[in-house]
Image: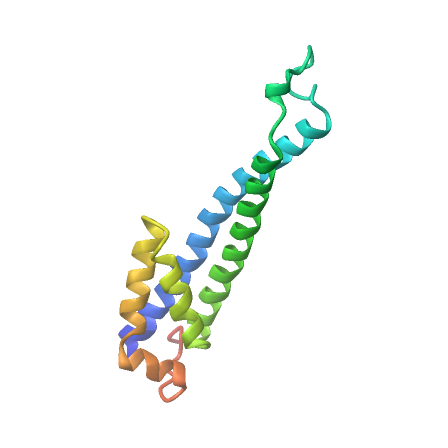
Length: 140
């Protein structure tokens, strides 16, 4: 049982770290979105001489970057939530679903998702989530 608790603790930490990595990538899209919006409103922002019509960002590109930023923020929220759920041993199905979604995000998400599914598939871990066996998370 102690090994299962340790694996859940490590997975929780890894989800927080992965949320930080996804946050960095999402910030890049948010920055591109911000620059595109400023350039759309003020075409002379990046080229003070005379902006050519080709330099103005397309509205579809702005919508795409905005969508990726919103999806990234939502996914970060889910990753942080799963990290907390794993450490508190709550919401087993939610943790399984997010682990499955992580499998689609190659390479780091795939590794994290597969290891999460392997750990969560154990009957002893399922018993920890059910509350039948609740060892202390941090030994004293």
